[in-house]
Image (cartoon, rainbow over all chains, first blue to last red; front, side):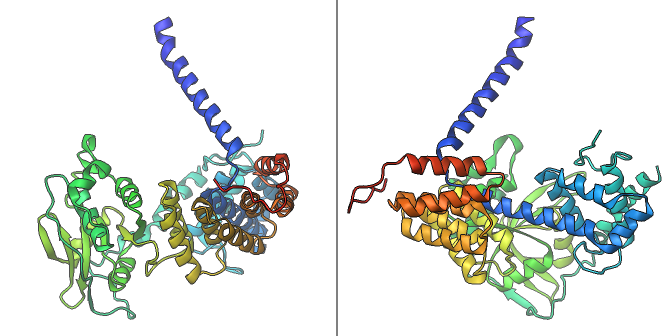
Length: 135
Length: 317
């Protein structure tokens, strides 16, 4: 019994010490490194891109057709973490119709993407693993 | 259910372009029919050592005198009987060179024309019977339909572009440039270049990183990331005034972002400019954001330092 427990417990301890050490370092070294700065900038950009996408008239229409409240969708997007938003934003970039072109017709793939994203956000489906479901 | 079917169909749409392999190099009107990179030495590889050999060729071209055998401990993973892409990238950085990944044949040709050798990862076998291999592309000839590369035991091998594209496709057309930090790739994008240069910071290559950010600013003078990077590199090189100048420029580019103010405060404080440092740190705290805790600590730390005596600057560590 004890033998079995030693490994997980010691691993846990190792990791907690690692964490401890890390936080101690960040408390003294207060220069923010370039990677963090670039990342923060990127995250801000993808948040803006997703919000702008959901705010588009054609996208709004798609949402309406499917009985999705646009305001609620925006709110849920706001609650996503940076990493999750980056994934959505990335997926949007890869879409054939392009998520950024203002006034572009929502292509078939975009349409599916939006519907699935929205239904995921509403908890009806679970296609995107990065979407947090509100309960 | 229906939604699930749609989702299954989606990747096909997205990756559809990958199916259209013509077996020929792309014809780009802006690029010459043939090109050759001069001055790329050749090292015949030892068994399994294509990674160190390819990297040594690229590093030597870039001005680092190093033999493949010296790179083996940095690059080769004995357990895998091969070298990982990340191994090549990490090793290049340790030698103060920027490792810049590229993808696709158009980028490949453009880089060769620009005079940059390209390390490529190819699969000489099949997807289910892989024989991974690194080579260095040094030229191409559209007329004869050939790619020229240093590979294995052959210097300047002429390979039919159809064959080359087939074996390269299996690595999703992965290529790697090894460049002196002051030299931008022909196909450089701001984001990818900054990421590649920031990699130098992690290996403590501050001089190289500063040169990389300088090069970025020549191409993209308004690059926030490059100014931040330059500030951080100069700070680490003890050029505090230069560092503060770069951070100040970053604050002008993003006046609502606390990060450059935080770093500016540090650089000013180290110079003994307590009053200005306090103002910058306070500004960072006022702007807030996810790093607010760090901003607060910066402010506290500067507040806690005693004001310097007249005429005496704080000694730089």
